[in-house]
Length: 101
Image (cartoon, rainbow, N blue to C red):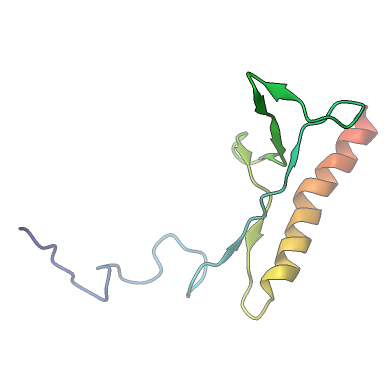
């Protein structure tokens, strides 16, 4: 069995590496889902299974899909961060898409 040589600390890294701040990186990424329903309120099924919808955002920086959310700042409450980030990313994108239609 081979063991890795740890030079500094538990990971062998010096400094914060690619992180933009020191300390733990707590993320607040809400997963918001609902069952897809028709106009009468009945759950839509595909191949005998209910269809689940979720909230996703199209990222501006890389063009890929992601969950809305962000990092919890030091001293902030995670619930407040969830509400703030969801409002900033998902709800503002929804309002922008309605104005374009």
